[in-house]
Amino acid sequence: MFTRIVVGTDGSDTAGGAVDRAVDLARLTGATLSIVSAYQPVSKRRIQGEQEGAPPDIQHEIGPREDVNLVLDAAAAKARAAGVDVTTHPVEGDPADAILNVAEEIKADLIVVGNKGMTGARRYLLGSVPNNVSHHAPTSVIIVRTT
Image 1 (cartoon, rainbow, N blue to C red):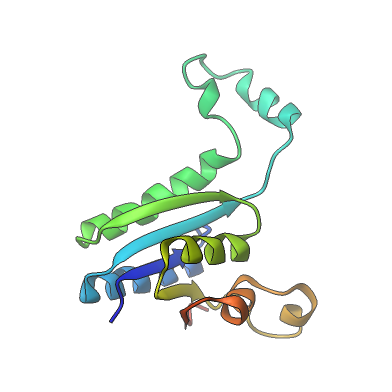
Image 2 (image 1 turned 90 degrees about the vertical axis):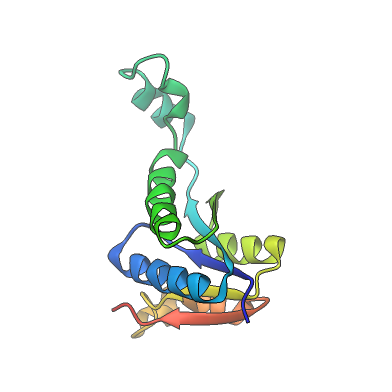
């Protein structure tokens, strides 16, 4: 069955549905779960502006990973509550590439993503995370219907 599962999340409700399904699969199969969330780089000027009013002991924590870490912590808490062994992966860059790279690194045997962005003409113009993952995955992919 499955031993290493990767799931991507951006903290949205639809991504939460994919995380829930991945947690269920990991619990049922005894697999480990890797939760991935990507973030875009932020200019130094913006980071410095956000750090200015913060207490000195937390200024180093303010940056583009701050929100991603909150998303990952919430998703990991769901997995731990279900008794699943979980690791989190905040990755700078494109979400689909982040999921695919983590899947390759850990030698995953399953990737789980939500279907958001898979319908209509928009997917042909802009592409989407589930579309890109499904076409380039090194392993099986489950696309969870979340919308």
